[in-house]
Length: 406
Image (tube, rainbow, N blue to C red):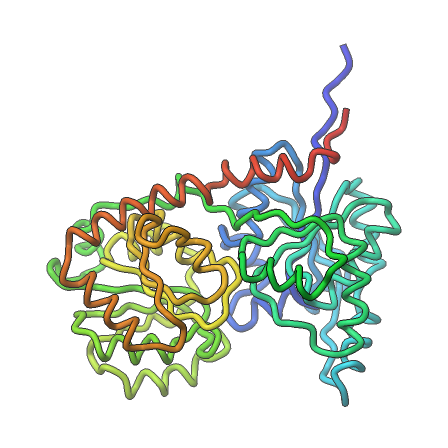
């Protein structure tokens, strides 16, 4: 009897020239990334690939290492390979900056890892970014397919990038875009686009489930009868609409809004918060990697709020929905797809940049405990059905069948 072949390896590439672009604003190191972080797009996909029968690895560049460094992700056991890299300072023009980014990509280091690990495919975070252009060409040289996902990345930054991107997308084997608005944009912008699959970010529904609300409140020292709303994630005022969120909360009659997170706008948000609804907003300025603590906070709240202007397929509302929270969210792309069906999916959608509409939805839920309960139950069902690791693993099985060894 012949020995079973090992599962095929898929390399996951996170966004950015170097991983510090993501880690620095939230105050984490590469070691924290490997040892403490879990969930999100990257680790959710690692779990889904493992469940689907693949062997994922994570490959990223860092300006903090001088040689390729192996690490292991504590929560999933996924191997992580950190390759030396550098950020390119802003140039005199957007086109020149794009050119320098392409030239600075550490392709030799990436190729060494991919060959050594016998990678059968690449899965790249964000296609509207220069790293995507270099990686699809590396995949072509290695004669393996490259796929890419949409996570809310910016549009192309220069005429040169737009020209190259068209060719890059033709070389790509497929795109994973869960946002219907983004699918429509890609189809209109790139007539020769590769196949598009509507595959969302996965969530571990076993890890994210509600605790008893009153026990969670007692553990956190929160009042038993207060109406509490919550928001968590990166402190990015404009993209996340945090200014609109504070305006809406000031118009509502809720007791406490809890905001948990950190990011590049920490200082500006502190100034903004100083003049908004004093005593009714609590900001915990920490990008927590403690999932048990975050689950406790979500379990203690009555409603989850998202006022984003720009999104891709955010994981934070999914975590809240898995914990049985109704969601009030703006119609930023990705969010209408999460809440497809509106209240039947566990949430209320409101227009972007409309604090009055957001406040009205908050008040509706505040005054109707029965509605909160119905929407919270619907939210949990929606996540289990469409966004669980198991559901995404099944979709990946359909997308990547050619990677299986026989």
